[in-house]
Image 1 (tube, one colour):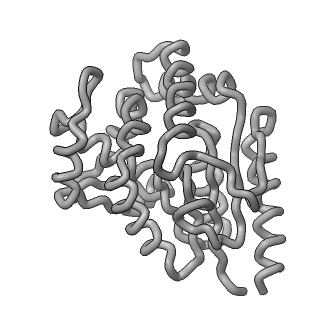
Image 2 (cartoon, one colour):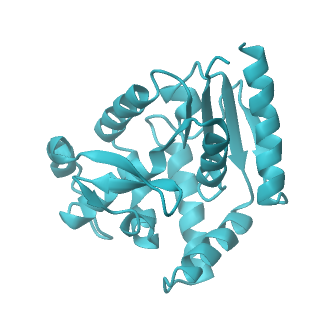
Image 3 (cartoon, rainbow, N blue to C red):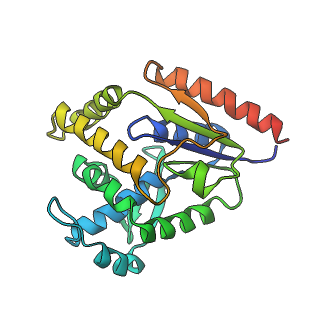
Length: 231
């Protein structure tokens, strides 16, 4: 069967990466977590003191982009690929609320987006890929055979994210997480370069009241329909 490209876009904490991993595993496709790529650049900027709560030295970050090498390595024990920055595993480090609080700002920088989009398009040039992010169906793969746009209420997403961070041992409050979710929504939707928008041919899924299994079943049905249409 001919392979297709599956683009999953949507707001933060809608479970895009969870279902993208499930679909990729089901099909034997490559999964690319583009959000982790932006988080890796953000982590690099934080480590080099280019960004904090009081300033963002965009010029310094742009000048240093050639020093950033992002890769993914499959972890058999975990069952998914972890993100590496310059050969170092930073999977845990990039999932913190602190990184989340800066990642949307970093993602607004055109030079950052240009470099990462180039890498993403290279990763998916042979199809057989499931990629999730903010601009996959609109910018990275506008010709993707299946485009999905995921959404849920801010409160639902904040509750999920708060539970995830708390279970991991992070000391955060629900109000902090909700503020972060709403702030990222605004920045992602209002940036000048590749804002978060639903592609005209994307299928919207509001998963506020869907279980993980229901969500997976619904999207798998869409995938199977797309595969048949592209035989």
